[in-house]
Image (cartoon, rainbow, N blue to C red):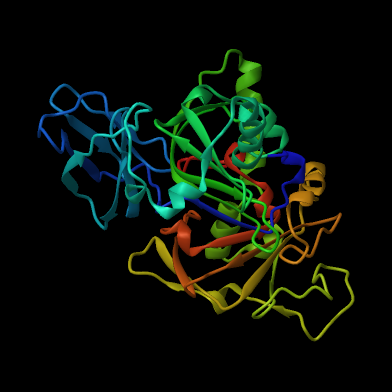
Length: 395
């Protein structure tokens, strides 16, 4: 696949961010035992973590694990080890408690080249994809890095430590590239100072006309890298602050706090469709089509004190008036359709949010209980794995 020809009309970025309010004083915990579903024997060395956080543990010889200081709300627990299918479970934490789980892991079944499989046992979807040819490997890997890590300056400083676990498949007719990983990807983000453990559930890049998209999802765990020098530690501190500023989490935190204007954000309601004729940025020509939005119009109390219900129709346009777009975003726009992302204001970062189901639950510290319920377009399309921060980060 010629990566220069890849044009992306939409992005459905479905990394599992099922996280709620974080508090150092929180004493809730999740404990349990990891078993082989077939033999019912304990499994040692399973990586168990709360998605999008620094919280995690490895199971001991008895298959036991313990994760403490779990935040209130809905979290996604992930268990992953080579040789078994990844396990995920949403866990609802509403008070200081210890939650005990028994987690059965299903052994992976690997296809072997010397085993014949009749055509009727292969799904129609599987038959449409062919394995990559050896000469395509480097090109496919570079395309994967571009759409997975991103093309920002931070992405330049990210390294995938185990790229050999990735396999690529191609649908020539529909021009789709699919990536499969038989273990968790380990990514060293030397821009922000984190080792990232990414359990990739799916990854597809489609370049077919009128059906162009990037779709990938998975679960992500973090651990902090040790800075080699004090200077590097200070650089990471600044880079983390810059990654947080202007992010979706920063916006949602400001939305809940009611200080959007102080943080430099303006909200515009573009009803059922994005308006191409008027960009809606400050200083542009006034228009009756533009309706500003107040936080009280779109958020309401949630079921627990740290949660809010976010609810609106159509597209919510978010203008970050404090920051201009990174110049790499302009270059990356060649991969995005102007139909879906009409504005590229040279002065402001402009993004859109949509709620496919009409509402979602967010937390006071800017987390989304169900990331599949929130669609991001515009400048936030540009920000990918290389800009991700764990939920514990506080500016």
